[in-house]
Amino acid sequence: MNMTMLEYEELEALIVKVREISGFDFSGYARPSLLRRASRFLNRHTMSLSDLMTHIEQGGKAVYDFIQELTVNYSEMFRDPDFFIKLRSEVFSYLESYPAVRIWVAGCASGEEAYSLAILLKETGMYNRALIYATDLSERVLASAREGVFGLGHMRTFSENYMLSGCKNSLSDYYHVAYSQAVMVPDLRKNIVFSLHDLTGDGVFNEFQMVSCRNVMIYFNLEQRQEVFRLLYESLAMFGFLCLGKRETLRYSGFEENFRIIDSHLNIYQKIR
Amino acid sequence: MENKDLPLELVLIGGSSGSFVIFEEILKLLDRPLSCAILFVLHRGKSSLFELPKLFRSKTQVRMEEPQHLDPIMKNCIYFAVPDYHLLVGPDERFYLDGTEKDFFSRPSLDATFISAAQSGIYIKAAMIFSGASEDGALGMKIIAERGFKTYVQNPTIAEVERMPAAAIRTHGKHHILTENVFEEIRSILYSYST
Image (cartoon, rainbow over all chains, first blue to last red; front, top):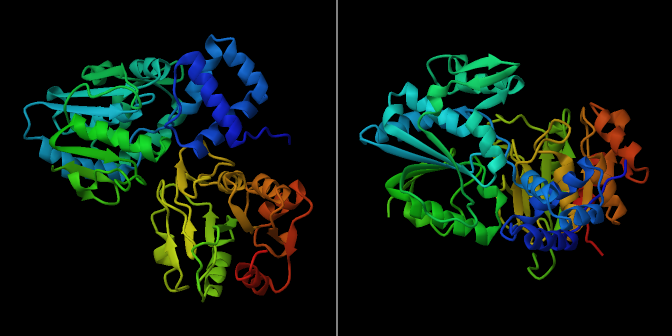
């Protein structure tokens, strides 16, 4: 078994090269995770570092494939079902009193979280006055998210999650099967806006009553993470809710004092100052 | 007793099915403060709710934690990898959680933690692997051994499930094999003074 294993100095050289060629800046990304992802990229494509450097220098598609694989977020619909139970009881019950609700799914990948929230909004009767902005830095994953197409193989896990989320129906009520794929019903996409946004470069673009940014903060190093927290904080309306991943807290964010803890296990917070 | 100027040292301990009871026994050995940090990686289902530090509370007085992203790695502390994330060790002596794909159907995986520790530049006092029904960890152990650190593998013939330690031995032939008086030996490793 011959594995290519990148070392940190090589990774730094790679980061510089990618920035020169594409303008995409990995500086704020957590190095240990990047090192793992970059090494896996090389092994999956049976490439050496110098092969990759050459491909990147030639420009074109290679650099974007590389960026894509290093930033892609694997998600599930109704990931962490207990989160959705809590969301309904603690957050949606509060947002119910609002005439209009804007929700931001920051780092939405292929749209799993956005569709899950759309379903939950439907089932709580709030969908028609809600707007979900789902953003990602990759146009490619956004295109797939807009289509709302998921492999049938994944639907089993998604359905199990759905059932554990305290929802009323069956997940299959929200998609139809075509060519061995699950296609989400168009009605669900009506109030979702998928658009390009890079959390490490782009700024505030609207004000939200809720931001879901689950399992995205673990991509960033300490300094970048603080900046992203600032962006999310500034994007939230007063008394708006911030939802982080199951193992992500406000620790080291610099904003610990600005939020009230709604649930310390599921990492749901409310902006209070 | 604890000298804050001494560099951080890590002990890595991994296992899967059949290793839970071994981890419990190892914790019972820890009756004095440690000069190192111990990282336990046990394969766990993603929805595994129980918190190992709570579950093992009665076994040792040494502090136990499930680390969060960016937590500094502390001496005299025992860490358990949380379910559904890989636990990586950074060169800045902090933990990093990672959501990349599973290794050998497992997240956390032993390989992810062990390889990141090997690459971090932090001194590894020992890496150990025990019973399990997967080949996860074999590569990480090999890389650690090749970088000159001490590695220990439970003798597959005494492991509840032999596949994991057997794979480690097959991948690299120079690990030290733990066969007799296993826990006495582990205790002396954990409380030894390095160089």
